[in-house]
Image 1: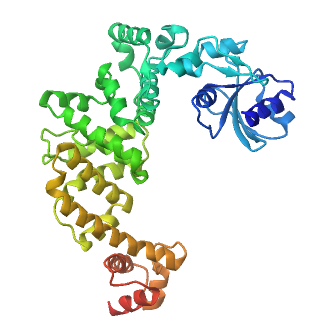
Image 2: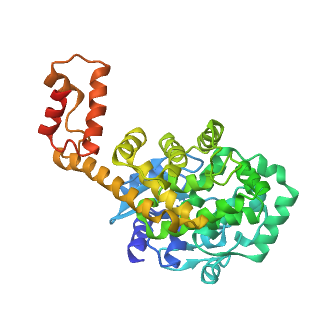
Length: 420
């Protein structure tokens, strides 16, 4: 805490009053260490504060300009007060657990009982003010995200107020732009996808942001998706590799556009559906491609897959997509209760994939980070070739030779190329 208070003291030397606020105070109260501290400053001129500090830059993007910098080794972001007083500022924050401030003398400003709610692990609207929802209905999803991520319960009155608002103002939810839904959904599913989606379902929100998932209730596939998300959530806690957006999104969309549990009727419509939603949610294109690759590939791993096939999969998609797809196949087997039947095959496939990836990694070790032993320019010089499609074909073939263990060095790559 002392370092954070030093930041406040340093800023107040510029004659601008400052407070620790929002996620920083909530994390400190929960025994967590924030990477970047959030401040509120009673100054509308962030540029003058930055000038007086002699450090930091002003980011004018977004509705609230922010001063970002570092003081005594502590990174911070500072916003101007929303209102005339710190109490006014806190009153505009969504949740009581985020409507707490700490002064430079270490004292608390907690007009809405946020510290009490943290101790009791409840999510409550700041001041029980339902107008906060009316001002921005997406705050409902944000509350559920916090409830899932922090493993807290919704306060009874907040729950009642939310349900009443949704019943009376369904059209307000339909007016929310897709990209705003996407931002909150992506944050909500990062660590607790099952818990978050289950909460969304409890408040009948899924139909607003992913209708095709809600539609699965008509053919009893919805519970299978929830079961898969539950296994994925458990896997996220123990497997760092799987902490990727694509892994969770594949679970969310695994049965979208299908009518069968095994996904055998997947078609281009289903892929377009994934692409359409995730594009509107502003998910990066490489993540979208990875999600589609996972969904379209995982089923292959219930049969023996040789090293040549794994090379083809990795080179066509990416190593990350195929690693995650194989783990995804295991999650579905666990969720549906047939893991034991395919355990030996999945283990053998895991071994084969690891051998392929180890060989590709060996290239990086030998070349100090390059993905190939030779570049296209070097191939042309070695074989006295001109630029053209044949060069690309040779490089692709060399990749396969490396992945299957036929080539394991620069000299081996040269010999393989000359033999072609």
